[in-house]
Structure formats: structure tokens, C-alpha cells
Image 1 (cartoon, rainbow, N blue to C red):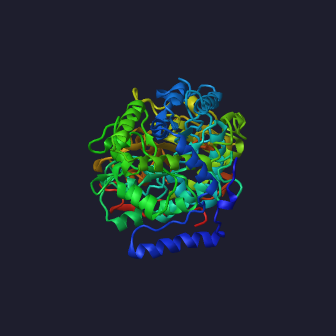
Image 2 (image 1 turned 90 degrees about the horizontal axis):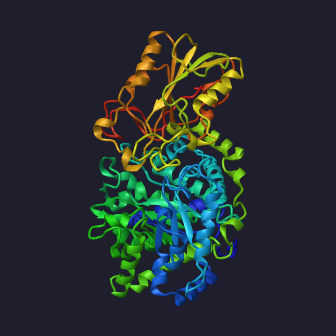
Length: 635
């Protein structure tokens, strides 16, 4: 791995942070967008090497570098023939036909594509292909990987040091499979919790989003001032989605964001100031429109603002066929997106047609050669900064193939800490903590259900089968501990008793349930859907209360929901969000160590306002609990 230490402008920690904020504050007084001083200055040797490569490349080779295809729709031979610069695996796409296929298949496929890209036969140039993956809460497409709480839970924990540890662990597990690049973190500021991607947002507070995003980038990509920056234990990151994705009207995914330019910057731009300030190398364009114009075709925002005013010199990648949503474009053709500033086009299926059309458009002058050269320069710059031209094939990398690192106990310990710190106690009528020697009922549709714990973007895109709508089978969650598992371990080891039947007597019942898995637009809510409908779990709570059994409700969700009746019916109510693979972390807080002495106190605070059941909007009255609310045992 090459380290460009002499190219880094390092500021001491306090000076580094203050310089960004001072720049931001000063600029915001007279214009929206600050010039961000990246800690990575351009390296003369890299720029010279890029010049030499560009001089040797044909139009076909340059356009090929700008294409990103999905692994199910392209072969290594295709990648070599058409000079393809990048591949990705979408949610629910794996190197084999089965999610639970051999772990080594990931690395084998990475080797095949790398080998094809480095084959210099038939007038090809050796330019390593870069593989991107949606590792958004751990290496979550890989069976057996550590799955961390989704971002909303991490926002509730709001622990910057923990974020860096999560990034470090995630990067290590990605490196095992030979993948170079993660499409994370999401630095969206969700302003309407009807949005199906709310759980990908850390908070409604842009400062929290910016700070936590910065820290996980430092864990994933390494610190620009240290020897670990983009080392073989680190991965290239993506700050996404630029810009305004969390501000759409009504929380409509891929919808319209209507704000002034200053409001857009103040509410949705802070994450990018911090991300670029710690050296993020890629930014992903957003599906939404801003004041009527699709971001994928927005030259002012992508080129004039991001690359110009903010000084970003990495690559801008499109989202899944996002170019096809621009008026006058299709999935197969869109010169407007390239001219607007998209450098790497994510065209999962129709990549060949897009490639051929783009070559034709360049030759016809519809896309200036200057724009093509700039895009390819940015792509090559990122690859060279990441050491991809020197590191050799993926299997030769430091952590490649080390299967024991997938779901490693040290990584799971970090995830379990994250679960503990993410829990928010909304109500407690002296029923928590529960003595470990108690007789405890553990009930509810989410109590022994790893799919409900992890939500969407876990092994599959939606956390379920797209055709049958059945949630993922248990075999996809190898190594996960459910909330029931954790409670059983804590209670039974202390001489208590756990039962999973609602029949009979008990000292307390823990009822776990919430939202079924979803992702993106599939999870959007309408105004009338804000309240969670009463179901069998609610009826279960009512029946337990009628028998004078105290009830602790553990609510699994990707956002607050209007559940007043459930909260009122429960003796204690815990927002557990989407905790991921380490469900035992819930028991670490709910179950006492010795009689009523808690093992761990509640630390989580609401990252979003919690609506009352009558709410028809998200961040608006009536509100049951305000942003920042959260009880503890000590208070």
C-alpha cells in the first residue's frame, strides 16, 4: 500500500475541527457553500501518472472507466473487453446463487474481476477495477458478518468514539472479502419520519449527523494524518446522498426538496463539510429533486458547488439508474448526467447500451472530451490514492480470506456496546431493571426474530424476498443472537426462569415487536400511517395486564411511530430501533446483575421527535416525546 504522507496537510485535532467550522461559518455569511480544506492535497506523482495514462487511453477505454455494472449482469471477460472501471453488488446480490454460499466466493470473484482488469492483451490497459458494496451497518450483505445497529440507533447512542470503532470493524470485515469500497455513510438529515430511509439517518439534528458521519469515515477509511489512511485494512467511503434526500416533501423517497440554497446548505450540507474535511474520496448523487430539478442532472450543485466551491477532487458516483430519472434520459442514455458532473455512472443492467451510447455522444460532441477527461482523472485519482495499482490482486491483501474476522468476537463486542447505548427508555413504572432470578415471559413477534432486529439492507435489499414478501429465513443470520437469546442467558445463569408461552404466571413479561423489515421507498408512510395499527402484540399486552403481569415493551423500528396506546398500556417502554446481530445487548440493560442493581444504565436519547398517535406529519405537533428525551435508572 502506498501512503502519501508528504501530501497530507495535517492540522492538530482541535485546530483541524476549528478550521473547518470557521471556514464554514465565515462563508455562510455571504454565500452558502464553504471551501473545504481537504487534508489530502494532490500528489504531483499521482497527477503525472494520471496524465500519462490519459494520453494512452482511447475514447472507448475512458468511457469504460466511467461505467459501474452489477455483478449479476457482467462477467470478468465483459469487464476486460469493455474496459469497465467499476462493479457493485446490489442488496441481495451475492457471488453465488445463494446468500449462504461459501464465504470464499466473494474473494474469488474479486480476484477474477481484478485479473480481467489488469490483462493488457488486445490493446487493453492495466487499470484495476474497483468494487463497491452497500455495507451500511456492517458488511451486511455477507452471511455471518457483524451487523451493527442502523444509523438511527447510533444517533440515539451519539458516541463519536464508538462510531470510529464501528467503522474500523466494518472495514476489516469488508477487506476479508476483497472489496475496496463501501457506499457509506449516509449523512442524510431526515426531516420527515414518514421517509422509508429514516433509519439511515443518525438524527434530525444536522450537527449530530455531521459529527457521527465524520467519525465513522475516520474508522472506515483511516485518518489522513496516520499511516492507516486507505491501508489494506481500510476501504474507500462514500458520503451520500448529495443533497437534500432527507428533506423531501412528505418524506417521499426520491421526491421533491423545496428549500432556499442557504437552507439546503444549513440543513443538509453539514455532513459533506465534515466528510470532505476528513478526506472522503467519493460522494454519491441523490435521487431527489431540488426546486424542480433532479440532482443527477444538476450541474450547479454537482460541479459548481461540490467540485468548485467546496473543492472536492474525488469522484461523484451516481445512484442506481438515477440518471434515468432525468427528463429526456433513460437507463441506457444520459449525456445530461455526465455533463452535470456524474463521473461514475451506476448503470447496473443496461451498462453495455449506456457505454455504446456515451461513446457515440462523445464522438458527436454532445459530451465534451474535457468532461470525460475530468471524470476519468477523478476515478484514477481515487484508485491511485487507495493504492490499487500497487497492492496486487485482492487475495494478496493483508486481511484477505481471513474468514475468522467475519463476525469476529471483538467486532461483535463493539456491536453489542452499540446496542446497549442505543436503547432509549421512554417509560418506566419501577419495573426495570428486572431481577435476574425472576420468572420472565419473553413474547412478541420480534423476540426471537433476527430479521426484525436487523431490518432492511441486511443480506437482502428489503430484508425480505421481493416476490413472496416473506422475511429472510433464519439461516441468513448466522451468528446473530436474538433478544430472547440474550434474556435467556442472563436470567437462567442467575437461577431465574424464562418462558415463551403467555400461559401461566410470571413476575414480568417482556413483549418485543415492531416494524417488519423494509428499505427505501418500500418503507414510505402516508400521513394516515404514522400510528402503528393495533395488532396481536397489542392484544397480548392487554391480556397480560388483565392478569396483573407487569409488561415491558421493547419496540423494534426504523423510526418513531405513534403508539400512544401501547406506551400507556405498558409498565415500561423501550425504543430499541434496529439493533442488528447482537440482540443480547438489550438484556445487558434490562436485566439486573444482582437483584435490582442494573448491569448497565440507559444512555440513549431520542434522535428524533416522537409523535403522538394523532400526528399526521412527522417532525410536527402533536409530539409525545421531544428530541433528546430519554430516561435512565439513575434519574
